[in-house]
Length: 393
Image: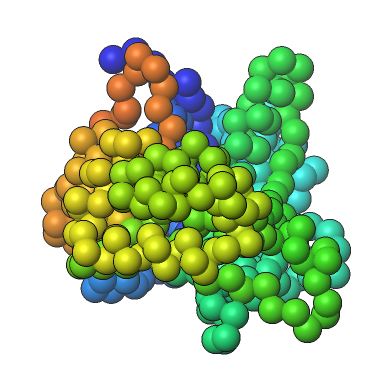
């Protein structure tokens, strides 16, 4: 098998929960050798049981596992052993935690001047929120996701997906790859960082224009309509067995949709020929579409419209998504028999490299499986004590 782009790159992974582990999973999928370093009791997500154990398995495949107490002298020696010939150190602690453990930028440069230091936090290393704890729902709240999700006459709700976590992890992956390219070109190992808050803000694009013109008490939740109200049709329409999302971003889409659904009177209505005209009569357009779609099954409607060039998609339950024929056919999802958790459906990296096979899939391994990598501990210094005992978690 031809080498993947990051083959030979050694990554020390101090990340935890969703965001950081997703970034290092992507690095592993690109060919990097990722060594996940966890506390002796394992990271928080590993300790989840039952159905809650699935995310750990999803985000920590294709990684080696080492367990260390980073606050102890022995753990410090082990960490320095791992870092000595590493290319990248990735962490998603709150700002200051890594330095509190004895690994500030200056110390890391002494250990390995070619080491790239990559950090992800909720809010970044500067600013008034710097030291605040951040989980996905906190970032969703602060960045406007929750305020714009739901219907205008109902309370706001969070997005069902862990948007801030995964967007943060994706940006961290990009930061690492960019830093590796910079080092290749200049020989300089840069520290890079990103934050969940900054990574999630661009996802609010559709709502930002209306927000700039809104009053302080205006509600910006639009249900299943376009965030700025500037596209019609744009909704989740009823089918006989569920709902289907249909979006017409051009007049051509509209003409195709109206023709395929037999809405000939609307198709010939000059007042609906333009986007502006359809927006002005949105309720009428939606009602006419719904009257037809409600008589058809999701699969029949999807097949008719998708083949006809109209952007659409059935609203699938997660039980259907994990069996989606396209995700399975393209290898984006694979079924595995996990040695600890049994039958699981897991994702592969979303990035494909032309002409190259993905690396063989190695399920997440038990804690400390690869502690043999620490066999090269240097001899203990008689004057060496724990690095720090006041580090924040």
